[in-house]
Length: 322
Length: 310
Image (cartoon, rainbow over all chains, first blue to last red):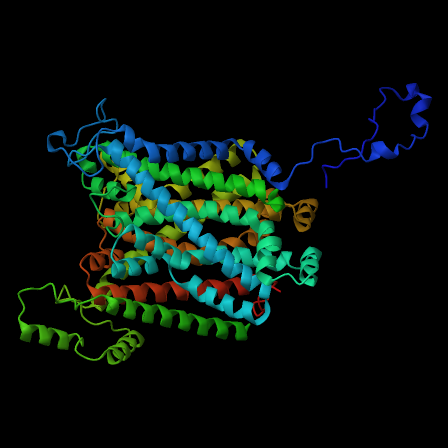
């Protein structure tokens, strides 16, 4: 590839045409060893992608924000003297202060503590949805793309039908039946959520399986599952990672949306959607902090994942490099 | 083409059938009858109630009756509001939701395409970066957060526009802003990237060489091709706007279909949930079908009957 540039003599442009030295026109001696020297360090695909991602300020800001958010979600509640569901009625609706950094809600619960519990739930839902989508989507799409023919046809028909189902309506329907809980939200989100991943993996596998190295592997008698795992999937990792990064904000949005409708996590447990919904009634009374913090963190987290996903897409997808 | 339309049509019917069946069996999987909570009713009342709603019949019979009700578009009475039928709720709510939806999609399309085209024409300039930052923000801020934000700032603090209900054109502005921003951002990003691709093509160079005005090149030549990806995602966008109306109608107290749907969910009013779900799904699947066909008509290069991706 481009990294293995052969050593060539620097090409000077003469300042004036009259002063061209004669030795410039002598043939260069062949240097068999020197021609093979690799001048630049060779970069793997991942090193190259990381280098590009690092140059993208917005995406790196998103990554840093998400790391900080993850740390606060894990450790934030430990540093707080308050608990997530225990209220203190004399301390109702206090504005942000030294005691309560983000203020308190109508039951005297500390909004700072509840925000980090909300972060735990949002990140957990988002990551679980992305991981489950990954396993189902990659298996399904990998098999459909590699087998091809009739198997592929039938499997794609099934996907077409699932794709036609209105996503959030199905989720709402499942939640009404199964009852609201964290587990049912994740199940409901992944029932139809893996379809997008499966489509991407299938499309990639269809292209890659035409390559000679797959043919070589086949002629050695390698098992299908091993070919998919060792030959095909590593080469589709770029689009898969981008898709996973973009699945997370969708899932976080869906959880907040459902909690906001009263179908998600139930009070007293905190999720950003629940907190925003609880605060909706008091927006006119001027208790802005109760709505501001959950609303800010939902938006900021989704923003961070979106810009990180965009950055990864630019870094990992060679077709988009311009 | 005809073959493809027929095939897509049957796929559409199949999808609606699957949704309807899924809804029916999910609703029946819930233990107990909808009347179990009403402690006041005695055994006779209970029996009569179940008879009235056909709940005394065996499940297969109920299923057939249910399918029949879908085909004839008559979803029966609401359980929790005895004076209402699902049809009367839909009849009252749908025009309002449709009005909100149509305005939203129009606003999103016009502003999104404008933003995308401007960003593409000023590629890698300040306007491009600004437009795309606005777009990512628009995608990242959930519609219910944006709705509360505009109520707080525009209605409560600045007192410019009314905060809720649906009585006059002024009332419509805030809900439309809240609902249209997300789709607008998606359309803007898509328009920009496909516009960038289109502008590099040879026929645009030809148009330039002929000495056409830049405006004419963009609007008459480039935009036509650049908008194809926007057409493909129209169906998905409609689905998003539709589910978005649930929360927007709740926040702004708009008496649309979404309000009855959310009410039905909260009251566990099964006929209302089943009726509205099937109605919503049918509407959406029909839209996806129309978008697909429109796509084939607009872009003759696409061979719709082509099988798979091989």
